[in-house]
Length: 106
Image 1 (spheres, one colour):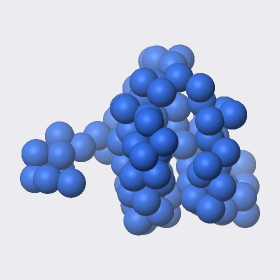
Image 2 (tube, helix red, strand yellow):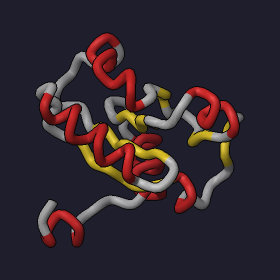
Image 3 (tube, helix red, strand yellow):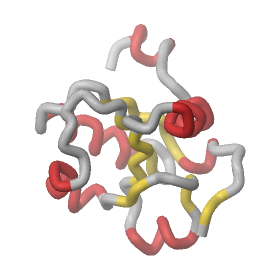
């Protein structure tokens, strides 16, 4: 990731809003199922990082906007790399859920 990517990076709050406005956009939580159940962004889908290969069954459109998040941003960065390697072209790591200002769903 270059400096330009860092400067134009979408934050987790912007991504949640974009997903509410665009039905093709996906908010992807790559934390464990237990972490997801403890609190997640409304409308997000949970595919733990270790299961990221199963995403093709959930998201067939390789150009769909996908916003990955986890706890701190490290796993979501790894997930983004894996998704791009699988052919997804519109993937953004939006960081950790700790930066989310909205209400969490349980």
